[in-house]
Structure formats: C-alpha cells, structure tokens
Length: 354
Image (cartoon, rainbow, N blue to C red; front, side):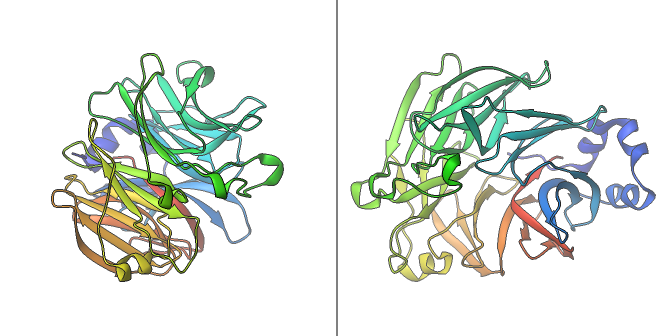
C-alpha cells in the first residue's frame, strides 16, 4: 500500500538537494531505508521541521514561524500546517526554491491537517470559519504560490484530519465536533452539545456523499486522526471529552456505504490510552494500524483484516507514528525518534517522504 524507498526519495529530491546537505547528513541519507518529516520545538523554544531517517538521524532542519503539526506531501513537496488555531502553513520543495509561507483569510484558521490532490495541483486544508463555527475545507493552488482559490463545507464542526479514498475523488474528513474561537485560544466551547462525525465529500463539487455520526452516549468522543488500510477502510482515532473514569472505545472504522463501527476491546485496554489517541498510521502493507497515546504513554496496534488487537506496548510521551519497513517508527515529546534521542520535543505527527 505504501512504498517506503530511500532511492525514490533521492531520485525525487534531485542533485541540488543532495549537494546542499552537510557531509554527515549525506552519509545518513545514503544509508537510510526511509525518510520522514516531523515538526519540533527546540530547548530554547524555537519551532522547526526536520527530515530524518528511520533511525532518527537528522538530515535537514528548517525554522518555522509557529508550532507545526500535520503534513501534506506530494512528490518533492511537503507542507507543514500550524497547530490549531494557527493561520500559517509553510511549503517546502526538495527540488529547489525557497520555502513558501502562506496563510488563511482573516476569518479562518487552520486545524493542522491537509492533503494534496492526486495530481498535486491543489492543496486541501482543514479550517475553521470561527465566527460561524462552521468547518471548512480551504482549497489552495500549489502552482500559484499556494493562493487560496475556493472552499467548501466539511459538513461538521472542527474538521481535523482527512484522507483521500482510493477513487481519488472522495475526501474523508474527521469532524471532531469541538467548537473553538481564536479569541479563547484552545478552549472548548460546546462540550455539552458536541456532534462529531465522519464526512465523505465529493472533490468535484464539495457535495456531501455520506455522513456518519456516533450514538448520543458517545457524543463527546471527538473523532480526529485517521489512516486507510490496504482494503480502503478508514480507521479513526478519537479523544474523549467526558469523564476520566469512563473507558469509551477510542477507535472507529468505516468503509464507504457501510455504517461506522467501533473497535471492541476490554476496558483495561482502553484505560491504557487514557481517553486520548494522538496519531494514527497504517504500516507499509496497510495490514496493521497503530494508534498512539502521549497521555497514556502507549501504542495500540490493530490487525486491519480481523479488527483485533495485535499488541499494546508502552513508551512514555509517544505520539508520532509512521510506517517503516518492519512495522512502525515512533517519536516522543521528550526527544526520541526511532532509536535516537535529540534535545527536541517532537510534535504529534510524522510524515513519510520516501
């Protein structure tokens, strides 16, 4: 399902990128099986984004104007989105050229995630129309300095992560359901009336194809991050805004045309995640899905075919997760990436670059 190939990265990056690297970085890249990107905060409090090998060796470091969060990747390019309620995103191109910083309109802010169209010409970004509270998907032209050219509704409040279905024409959006406004920072303004959902939206006209909601007793289960398995099923990780003493299911899955289903695990397994899934990733074959919890310091791995738990392991402050050749690479808020330790706080997500 997912090709992780250092040779592909090198071929797409081009000679200019390779020549720009320090000798140690070139050596690390030459021996790498895969290349990733992740946002970070340094000990002095500066924000940036790094590209790394699967062993955690840093290849490049670039500054960011604000804290970075999620990524969109296509070919030689990747975009880093600011963490909610940030208004900035920065586009990098390994083929050359200076980074491009772009922003939302004055009445919008990013929710931290987005993706490219299959041909790479358009960038779709999860946004908040904060005066009305409506979730929006902003559309940016990557061939024109990431100029914002359109938008359409996300069919809910608080759109967060999104993925493109196998048909290349249907966007699957996780609407977390939490109302926020930049005047109140990250305060959650509607916990009593939350309505999280999964929306399938046509990219051709922005129309709603399907919408999946949760039963009323799980209305505080904010649906946030997602990954697709080899069969095209979408897996969703949630964050519970209810009582800490409760152990609701934190993982859901859905196929187009089917009902949204919740993963069935005993309470002690959910308790390990402490009501919070911070990141979700499929492995390289799309047969296993990993769900991380920085609050619980745990990684849950699920077999995508049987919808059964494979393993749960502990790792303090773990959140970032992505596929590697043997399973998954993870990162932590305390500086661990793969097998390496850095004096950096890695942010929630890891992007696969090649």
